[in-house]
Structures are given as C-alpha cells and as structure tokens.
Image (cartoon, rainbow, N blue to C red):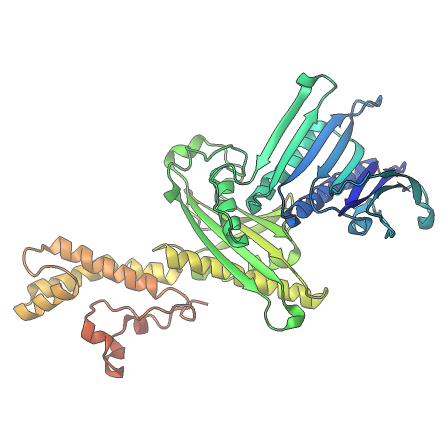
Length: 491
C-alpha cells in the first residue's frame, strides 16, 4: 500500500505494506473502513477549498496473480494535506502516520511506512523526493491494494457518495471509475454531481443545502435514480420539509458547536405499490459529522428515544443501527407516509468526555424538536398531538350544533353579526355552507393551539373575531380559545 499527499504547495508520499495475519477478514474490513476514511478526508479537503475540485476514486484489477486483488486510488484537488492529518486513521488496531516535519514548498517527499515492523520508530523510512520544478499545486492521492470483490467495493463506495450528495456542496465533482483491465472498453465511470438535478441557488447556507439535498435524496430513493421517482412522487406537493438549528452559545468555551436537523415527510402515491423502496415505511436517520457521512453516535440514538414523539402525534416503536445509519420504526405511521431525518454536527470545539456526550444529546433533541415545530408551523394539520386529533374529531358535530343555533335564532341582528364574524353574506347562505365554515374555524383553532406555546408568537385565536375584540382588555380573555386548550401537554 502506498499513498501520496501534498500540503499546500508541498507534498508527502509514503507506502504501507500489510502484515501477514491469521485475521485476514478483519484486516480486509479494516482496510475498507480505511478507504472510506480516506474518501471522507478527501471530500473535506475539497469542501475547504474555494475553487472547483475533483474527487476521484479508481478501482482497477491488480496486475498481480491474485484475481481478487484490487488497486484503489483516492485522489482530490482540494486544499492539500500533511501526515499529521492521517495520524488518527487506524488499520487493524495499528495507527499509521507519525508527525512529519520539514515539508518544503519545492519538493514532494516520499516515505515508506511498514506495518510489519514492531518498533514504531523504524516503520517510517525516508525515500528520495521529487522536485516540483517551481509549480504551485495542491492535492492528495492515496493508493492501496486490497483482496476484495470489486463489486462489493463499488456498491459500498457508491452508497457513501449517494449520502455525501445530501450535503449538496457545489464546488466538488465526484467520479467513481472501475477498470477491469487495460482494454478501454472495460472502463466504467459514474459521476456524482450535487447540483445537477434540482439546482440550488448560490450562495446558499449549509442548512438550505441540507434541506435541498435531503429532498433530492427522498425524491430519488436514496440518490439511486437520476431524477425523482414519478411513481411515488407525481408532484412536489408530496413532500413536507422542516428544519431546525441548535447552537452551543452558553459560553465561549463551548461556542462553535452546531447541530442541524432536517425532517422530510413524504406522502407516497397510491400507484407506487410496485416501486421497490429501500427501507419501506421505516424512517432512515442519517448522520453527518463535519461535512462527512459517519456512523450515528450513541448520543444521537439516546436523543431519538428520549424525544416526546407523542406530542407530535407519533408513537415511537424501536430503532436499530444498520450500515452506520439508524432505522426508526413507528407504531402508528400510515402506510402511505414516510419520514426521513438527517442530522449534521459541525464546527465542534467542546471537550471530550461525559460533558460532550450530554451536550451533543441535548443539541440533537433541540434541533429535532425545532424541525418538528417548523413542520407544524408551515403545514396545517401535520404532526398534531393525539389530544389535538381527538379534539379535532369533534369539530364536525360541534359545527353543526353552532350552525343550528345560529339559523334557528329569531334575532335577525344576532344572525347577521354571526355571519359577519364568519366572513359570510347574511343572505342566501345554506346550512351546509355555514357548517363547513364553522368547522374549518374550529379545526384552525385546534391546530394553532397545538403548537408549542413558548414558540408561538401569534395573537390568540378566536372562533368569532372582530376588530374591537383585538383591543379588548382582560375582561375578554376568558373567551380566548387558547384558554380552552391550556391544559394540553405540548412539551
């Protein structure tokens, strides 16, 4: 295994030899994880660059005799790297990379890193360097050889890239190249572009890109399609999107930690019964750390289970971890509804340990709740609590009762005022029209009062409303519909 790195206008390269071991399968799995870490680092370097960048992963059959040996190249044109950046990368319990100093701007240094050597001080060997001939460039290339099925690697890397696209970073083009031999006809290229379908205006905030990226991910069934699935989503109205951002602002010591949450609720078309959706009706929870997909941490799982989902009309069933992301199963989700969640934690500067875990968990809970509240604010009737749904079910009968009282009254002035308050003409309105109008008013009142009272800044809702009622004092407060529902548990 060998790798080439450049740091700014300088560079470093080294090679790694895999040790022989009885735990071959464990080593291969470790190398696959290493590949994903290298790809993740390459993407982060591209994201940090202000220029257009390319991230390329090339898989090629090794010229060695072993037919299962695959050469893997991970290269990028990002801001450049140095050996310190790879100090935390581990390969089968062996950390590779020691701190390397004295990197010059006019040379690319070469090192050999041998894991067979038990003495760590002897693992790194300096090799002849190459001149850069006055050129200024940055980028990184890592190459390694692994005994693994090339189809398995393609599937795993493609899944990783499909998730990276959710971030919708516009300055990075990703290509996955597969070469089965020297014949040009055996070359397969798959390009992943974040802004190719459903382009997002530039500039856009991280949250705006995350929202748009998750929409694309849902529309295209995990970015496995080139465009949205017309069977499941005949129109954009099938998607409801909510977002929330939680920041650590208690003190300078903990500043800079941001948690973004985006939730998409999709209503699947009835004609989509033949569409092979990946996760069915389970909720896929994806987790990103510092602009890269990563396994969902235990703190996030605890946060998911501790949220009061019932206040949003959802009954939490169970959660399992699969392939680094979480799958949540609900007990009361309709068969035509699907929920997807993405979490992104970045710019973290807080210390490690129990305090960090507890703070991360609180950030996740707050961001998810803000996203759920955002959905309730923007889409009428979405995520109503069980109590609100029960109260709303009484609206038709209550509307008929109120309507009959109005129509049966012998006081013409009273009837005229009621029609005026409801925004209806005083003449020629039938009982059915009046019933519907009152029912809609009742439902609106219930839905508005089901929101978090600490977040709602709207004027309390009245069933019958007139200008003079807005100026009334405390004497009229008993008529506020909000008081009728003040006992509802919205926390």
